[in-house]
Length: 308
Image (cartoon, rainbow, N blue to C red; front, top):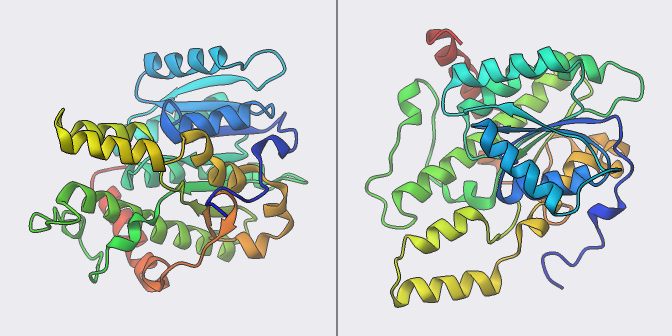
């Protein structure tokens, strides 16, 4: 039985006509595959991308892949997550266009930009959640990479974010920074769910793991080895063992739209979903309420200091 041997199939999702979805990272890789799955069920999907050209290219590729009449609508929001001010502006521009938001999917390994983007969108998310028979969800794409961060972490000043892991041999520094960002996403998602629960807001927050995926990022990693023998060996292994983004999207699609999630809200609150649709236990260091609160408050303090 393989990782994707469960019976869950995105084709079995209900009709999503009338649902509004906003996804970051939807122009490529796993995010692009998520858009394919949800658009085929009729959702109206906004692809948040750095430029209109990038999103427009993605929309053209989606249509070339068979999306057309009878499928969902596709639109674009310009978003650069690297700048918190731009992330806030993008969320405000979305709310000027749309009066509802049923599903927010954050599909990039960036913590602060997504924090601002999601925080700014909270009024429209809460308004939608207040409607009869609503089903509002926030899905943060993470990965098992967070588990590589075994050292003690603290979030007392912004400098605590700036560990560059220069002394790491394996995982190497850039990979360790990626893993660290995934830990932040896990902690913040759990804290976000706690805060919504405390307010009595029926929004479900989940994190997902796509699995080992032959994504654009994996291909860039292969390219980093150069044209020699080692690069060829790594490429052979990844192409043989890793799954496609279409299957890597399953866990996120399940969290975003599967009806059984809303049918059992207690079960899925702050759940970590592994492919294709399984709830996975998470180490306490990625769920710790004290660390989550500390991270959240420090992030808000930093954003206040820069005027966001």
